[in-house]
Length: 390
Length: 142
Image (cartoon, rainbow over all chains, first blue to last red; front, side, top):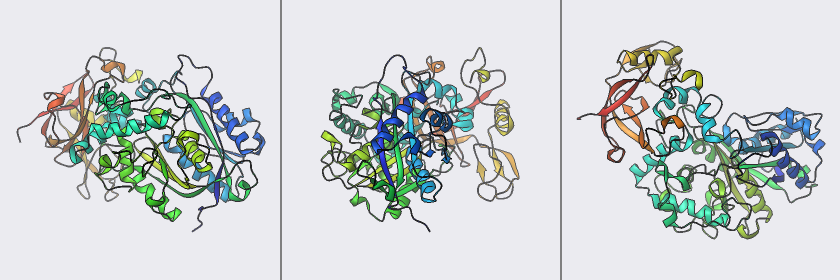
């Protein structure tokens, strides 16, 4: 079997500011184009060098990106239908196409007016079950009972875990507080300058019990993009390349119905993580930090367990005592994550992983970070895992 | 989806097409029925074309005992869809039926704070519009 291990590098990263204004000042396309320009420049490339675009579904098409960027010969484009797990998945999709000689430089953009825009998430998702996550199963069997949006879906798993393993709200709080602490070191984070205590957390209003507001990610206007190419080409570019060691993608079963899984805690990463670790040829102890998709706080605990950083049921105690904070055994979401930096569908997790491995993370730098992991998460817990090294 | 939300009721309704429509038609007749494979006898929900166990296309609508146990739940306190604003707080529950399938539904006679994992429940039927009857649940003795 052909392995992509050590063959593919992330060579450029770019972001817009993350904001929560009342009115949008652009479109889902334009905000992504800004991140694309930044990522291409960061790599030291020209727009016309890009010959592959891998957009996330539902926000803007590769064609309209190409024509704005002046890319006249797009050799390849694709969108993996795995919702917000796409950024990590697209590193592999682009990597496969590049390694096969189909194209040379893949641009992976993500971004939206997720707060101010017409795509105000909660209303749009609730009214468009066939367009956004959910599909016919959700429309026909969840929505009529008042289960319309992700914090409701995924609190099913949180409640189940609390009932079965005794996981506590304080442990969910430890997740939210860790990410908020990290955001205090990152001026780019929406929650920069807004620290949070356990008292704040426990006093916060409920959204869908056991999820309170502080367990939920921050809808935001923002975009990020990366550029991927071969390790060989990466050597000639602007920045120190970050190399893909391992990748895995997976879906729980059945993927389109979160209610009838034999094991309700099964996630995409349950299957994806072992594949990524096997490809990388490393163990959990080799991971210096993790950027874990944190749409909701319990799903971080769940992914830590499902990826094998601890046993099923031990994730609550695992996140306590500063273990997932900077300086701890496994720093998680060192820029603040979707819960305290901003929800850019996990692209900000990849960008932060690259910054860490370049040594560009400033005040939230993990000392001597050599290997990092990032997860994507979409739909009813589809998952993708990338393991990157400096 | 606007076209599926009746004017008076105002809340999301299921499609009444295909096998999903048949499921809800049985509910309207006050019967909870799930697909059961004619080859291997495996029950399934939500409706599917094929049996995931044996690959058979042959199935029947088999009547459930209507009894199940509470598997997990969430208590919605913030109405993420405006049409549920008049109902909060309410618990959305996941019921595991005796036959195996699980259904997302509501338990109508238990306050959210009194819900317990494994709590026995039985189906009842709530006509929410002229066309649509939803399966809901109430506390059962055993």
